[in-house]
Length: 196
Image (cartoon, rainbow, N blue to C red):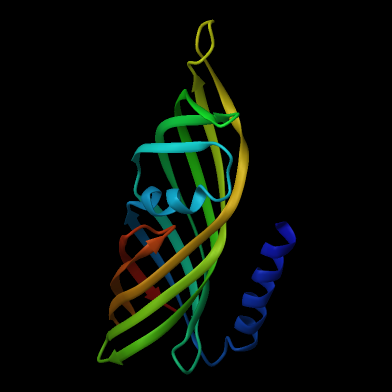
């Protein structure tokens, strides 16, 4: 996984450095909602046991993006969110509830932005991203005959996906944006950007 992330980073950074003198960059900060809903369905394919979320914090992301002369954007994003709920373990085709959990997830992903429409400080676009999600959970085990105890779940690394079919940016040097999609940034996310 480290080699994959290093390769992806090099594939992004090298072209950006080669074109840095004639193109533009931007940095954005955004907040999203319902991240755990969109990630929960994806997560079930990669883990044996199941986290059933009851609540989650908004997701917070920082994105650095490079725009080529054709307005295609390529960048990298990093962010995190927290969630809590019930942890269910599977044992010989039967499931049983172990107890509540709290979890921290950190996501890093390259992203590709493709514009639909650009005119007078308004841009419509789509975004796709595929990266990795690193999660650490603390589980309170209520299934023992003795007093309940809390133990850390081993760290988990699973793929993280973002598909945003509709995004809207407004402003030229500094502005805002809103996106509607599915994945690690949530169903709806919005934020501010600054070009440099």
